[in-house]
Length: 502
Image 1 (cartoon, rainbow, N blue to C red):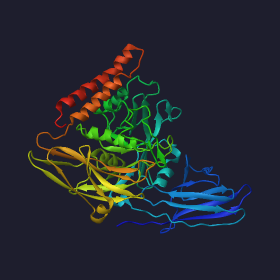
Image 2 (image 1 turned 90 degrees about the vertical axis):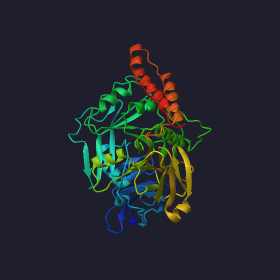
Image 3 (image 1 turned 45 degrees about the vertical axis):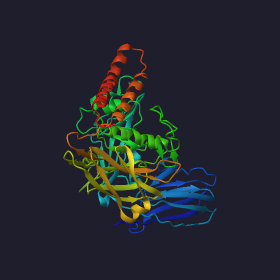
Image 4 (image 1 turned 90 degrees about the horizontal axis):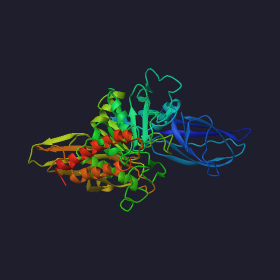
């Protein structure tokens, strides 16, 4: 059963020497307790309101349920938000000079996914560690490693890292203070669950290779490495190494109010096939499907880069499913198992024959496998259809009205090994707002993994293109870096040779 919570926003206004003092109180109407939230507010001139004492980024601030503001007379449009499990509240506050006022709004819960065993997290947070607890509460986020070292920036340069960088608070929320990012010519890798930062401060754009640090991290039990976006130029090298754990398909080019419509210094898309504004999102997904179509089983992840790009914390998030109690370690175990969906809006939970994403269905050679797929979907935005992606192609689009009537997405048939997932893209034209399950896998007979020749060739061509970009004056350094690219080239050549599908 859905759990509906209400929150009341009250605003009392008193005369002040330099404006009108406002006390915003956001409370759960069922309990009367303050409710942490995010507030977007603009003044009469359209300028973003920025409180002096509350965590602020780009166009919003967060509060623990109470915000003290000082505003001049006029009209102030606002939005109150608490992540995708809550309905957005909007309104306009009219502030009159020397006149006490109050306004009441309700902030209603759309769905409580933790009651279904789904727990939210995100892997790309650049906000101050001192703000992280309030930020997570305001976004109803449960797991968030914090990036505290990034190339030449290191929070711990002038002070010792904490003895225990993992913090649990509020009962079921966790953050880890030793997240890191190695972002250079080939793109960005995110590192988690280390005890200390990697010594990467002296690295330049190409040297040493990111593979040097990646190999070091693999010596640490429990460490996690995420490819921050699929289109980074070194992604095929990292994939070939077998040393990465996840890949971000809901990433920081997807914004709450728009998109970053390019691939930065990553591999550019064909803009005729993938036009703005949603082309970057579709290109991201096509690359991920090529990865899966090469027989690599890598769960999708998500990260917003709040603190660098305009997003709130948790805008791009990943949910993992757990039976039983949430713990930090179990959350990562579920992510590794692929029991996930990623989202920056729609909340899409699917099962195939009762199994969660990440499940491997196995049948004997010569048998046909039919899998019944059902879905739960909650969304604040309109959605036209739910799509089944099978072996890299849309094989069925079920209209929202048809799904709403039955809860079913029909049956998926396999005669050979392969994979499938489900996605839903919201009808919001200015950004790429979507949800995608992690993949389900099918193994039939003696060739348990589908390997597409076209997908393997896609990455082989990519590696060869990247080799030509490496510029180093020192011949020894260049040779050292290129050995990793050559190893990747051999890996993808092998995939082309062993391919069992077009």
